[in-house]
Image (cartoon, rainbow, N blue to C red; front, side, top):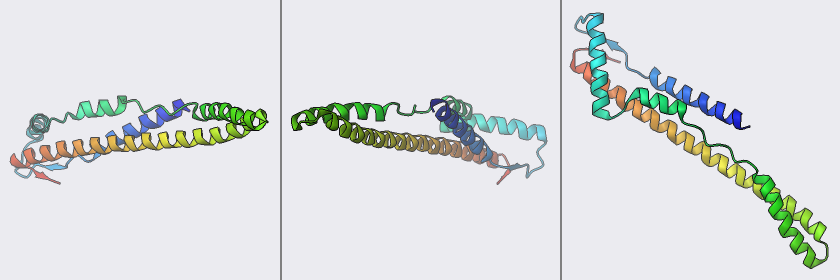
Length: 158
């Protein structure tokens, strides 16, 4: 299960980086700039955009792919069952049947542990989505800065 979650997080990060890179502006040399000049201008504008926005696309991509996912919660149901069984046995002992109380407590505890586990998983998914949105916003800001710089150098940007 843990390996599957890590693989899914890695795949998600890779898809996010590819998506961010796919949103790069399309640049047309409107004033007849040579391919070499366009390459130089693009490189200079990317350096300027990095300095201006503080966003480093390489670092963002590395951070996204290396950022470990939140490990899925383990053992919530077992812990809930154990706690519920103990509490149920205590209550059952007072009522005269500790075994029956333990069984009822274990079932109740398992259900409560499952609810905690699902709640934790939802919170981890929400955090992952928030991280994705932040990376997307950073890349959008960076690409806008590159586009502004290239426009200032006489290129048409789409």
